[in-house]
Amino acid sequence: MLSIEYLPFIFFIIALFYSSVGFGGGSSYLAILSLFLTDFYEIRSTALILNVCVVTIGTIIFIRNKVFDLKLFWPFLVSSIPLAYFGAQVKLSEEAFFLILGSALILSGVAMMLRYINAKLQSHEFSLIKKLGLGGSVGLLAGVSGIGGGIFLSPTLNLLNWANPRTVAALASVFILVNSISGLVGLGVADTFQIDASLLWKLILAVVIGGGVGSYLSSKKLNLRILGGLTAILVIYVGLRLVLMHGYGINI
Image (cartoon, rainbow, N blue to C red):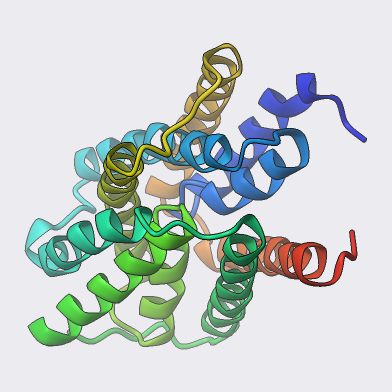
């Protein structure tokens, strides 16, 4: 088993990889931290803080490159923030938490895979009600699962042909940012916010560097289909691993 000293390097790679498609990496942070830490609430709190660090960089870069469009994004955000806050206050057992997270990740990864293997990248606008409903439901799932939610929202929007992948990546980045902050507030109110400062600062440094590199790559005209496909494989693996480990005691 890897030593905890290797975590910063591992998290650097995760942040680089996930941020390149507009994600924070919270799902993988949770999965890996669960192998090293025993405090369930410390795992959730740490993952959300790292999410905020990564996607803050991504959001700034998307805004500077004029990919971020508040007129398109605001309905997803206003409905998700309060529900992410309330979702974060739901107190689940560790087993139930990881089973919910793992199942959601598998479905998310499959949806992402289906989208990126589709040769047609058409797009069409959603109604206001559809945006509010989708943003709110994903926000609630984000709060309960302890991650920002972009990894659920992005493949859904791509599968439904809402916009081009780069616009979706920009929305996912800011969506994760606001909902991770809302989730942290929810943990604080529920008195379940726990961190280990001596470990946290090393992980923050690692994900800030990795997230900066990944977000820069994402803002350029690269082949996001390949990045999206590779990320989908990683998401499915993480989800499957969580379900097998916490549901059946199988470690892969």
